[in-house]
Image (cartoon, rainbow, N blue to C red; front, side, top):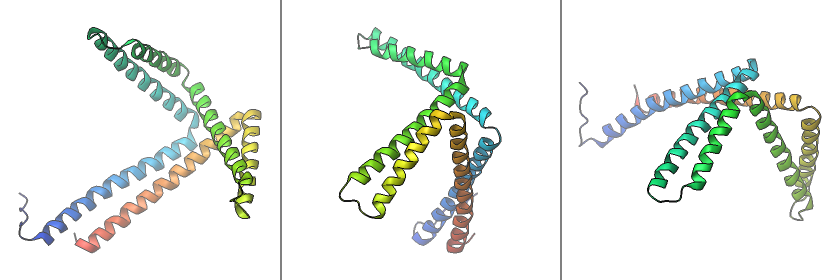
Length: 201
């Protein structure tokens, strides 16, 4: 049985609270870091399988969300409330989810292509605005030119060889996820070490 904290000893109460928070934060951050590293490794080892899994997950989520939307619309109809657009949205979600689950890899490819095109568009717009703006000078202008160049290159690669562009995107995401996960794992152990030094075991 745990010994209750003395209410007249605020230092002890703070020490106990910080110790428990340190332990909880350690496991939460550590598990998150390990999962991030594993996800990154899976992306590198089996990108197609991960894309299919992602497509199936998104499709299933849309179907479930659509069913709830349809159910809510039917309940609203019984209460003489507006329900038409909500019902149409629910049906569209279900149909979209079924299509995505049938062809999850195609959905992942199209989604990745859209992301790359958005990135390229963002680089182009930022680069043009940086070059055209009178408030940007020197290195800012140079960075704007680089944005334009990389934006154009990304557009060319996506339209000429979308497979290579998507594979490069997957590698970038995978490497970033692994590095981020390792950082979280290190941060978890460093945080626990600092907690022990400050408040003891």
